[in-house]
Amino acid sequence: MAARPLALTALLLCACNLTPRYDRPAPPVPEAWPQAGAGGPAAADLDWRQFFPDPGLRAVIELALERSRDLRIAALNVEKAQALYRIQRGASYPTVGVEAAGQKYRSPERMDSNGQASVKEQDTVQFGVLSWELDFFGSLRSLEDQALNQYLATEQARAAARIGLVAAVAQAWLGYAADSRNLQLAQATLETQGGALDLIARRRDAGMASDLDLRQAQSQVEAARADAARTRGLLAQDRNALDLLAGAPVPADLLPGPEGLDLGLVDVSAGLPSEALLRRPDILMAEYQLKAAYGSIGAARAAFFPSISLTAGIGTMSPDFSHLFASGTRTWSFAPTVLAPVFAGGSLKASLKAAEVTRDIAVAQYEKAIQTAFREVADGLAQRAALADQAAALGALAEALDGALQIAQARYQAGLDSYLNVLVAQRALYAAQQNLNAAGLGLQASRITLFKALGGRL
Image (cartoon, rainbow, N blue to C red):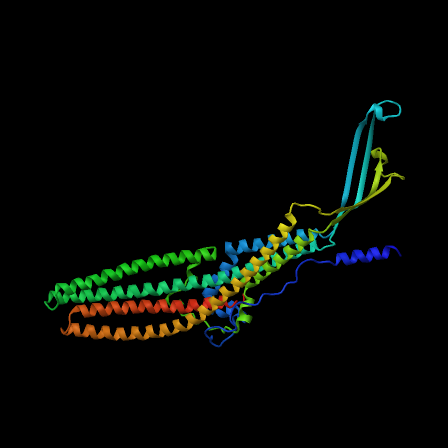
């Protein structure tokens, strides 16, 4: 009966946990986006294979997910965090093993009743609970929670790396397609300018065109040739960037052509910030890191209280090895240890203060991650609408400039205007067509960025 209050007290102490209660910080962002998004499926409910309809792009993304070294590093970090969590979790359980020891020593003459030196031997074998720290104040549980949340944070970091890789590969693939279209445009312009140069050369020989017209046409040809060479260099760089992201050379049959810029990506809906942002892997990672900081506070608080550990064992002991397991050699040991801090030079208070400051830093990092994500989505929504209007306007501009070029060519051939008007119209049309390609690339890239910013599903 007298042992029951002691057992109850021990149970109450074991239930003690000094880790502060975790309350998720309120998102420091507005409740709605500054610009409403278009209707459509939510990004988190849309698989990336559904978002990217082109089979060639999906094949390149699959290649990158399989061979990317960045993802390999992220996966290894997850395995490392999992191992560290298992190590910390194992500290809560008793260490059980077998211990064998042998001792042989010389006893001096003064220690022997006969006044003679003697050699003595002692062999011991013990097995059972060798050591066990009783987690009365939750120190081990706090450290275990910290390790668990660090492991979960690395899992989310891996997910963030995967969706980031998917978006990066898609944008690099689109960049290659855009430069392919620009190269096609430059080569077509070079052929057109070459034909115009031949025509003007014949007109000059017939006395119907001046040397100035011929030189101006030659300048257009050389400018088109230089631009084609520059675009081929950009295309090679795009190929190198795509190979690096994929972790291996991308097969030529998977590379996009000029038509690859027209992916037909769907517009995803943004939803509410409180729903969309909290599902992003990077924000979940920041929250798990914040929870891990709470575990550090619990462990720092528990360091102010005594730590109790038990060392016990049962085995046999004999003065010689041959009789080690004979009858009458049984032995046992039980050694509880209590270590209570009395004076630590202020290190315990400093450790607790450091843990609390680490928690405050994690709160600020979590809030900053939400604010950064909010801005990414808001920028994506604004850019998507602006780029759609810009692409439509540039398309109309290119069509108008093409008509102006035809009129300028007709007036020049009729002798009504100089070749300078044709030259100006050609340059304006070429620039408008390049800007139209850039706007198409920007529009597709903004949709990919928005899909990633809204936490697109892998």
